[in-house]
Length: 186
Image 1 (cartoon, helix red, strand yellow):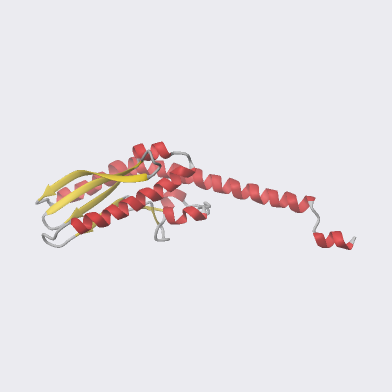
Image 2: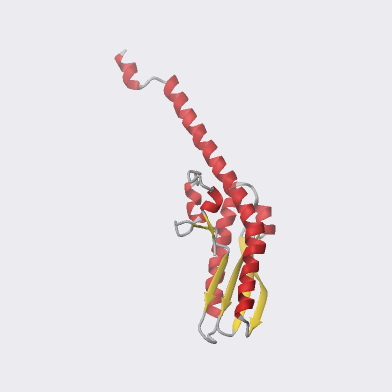
């Protein structure tokens, strides 16, 4: 699951996303932004180990992408303390949820961790739906999205200000320095 670009931009679609962060907000290049819940499903009583591995990779990449935005705002501590993404794996009998987070190690390496949050055997459809609804409604909508929306607005504001400053500088240089062609004619 993910947020949409429109949930960050509103009706205005002209917010300047820094080119180096485009893949970090929308890894597939579409309207899907900052994925936060990853689900892998296996048939019947299939072994879930492959699904754990796939979700670990996806969750780690999602955390890294959010981290990249937070670095631009010097918000690393908030990222470490507050940003979480979730993975859910299940087959016909078992359902498991992990909460993924990141921390910076003393050697400067970004390290990705997870905690087993919930494991259900012989779960019901209602239990699974409630779990997903709670994750989306309680954490993603109330905590993660507002935080990411502020980050999005701040980063795009910085990008816009940098673009305007560059444009003003070019304009000033053009007005104060006559072109070399004119200089040669005189």
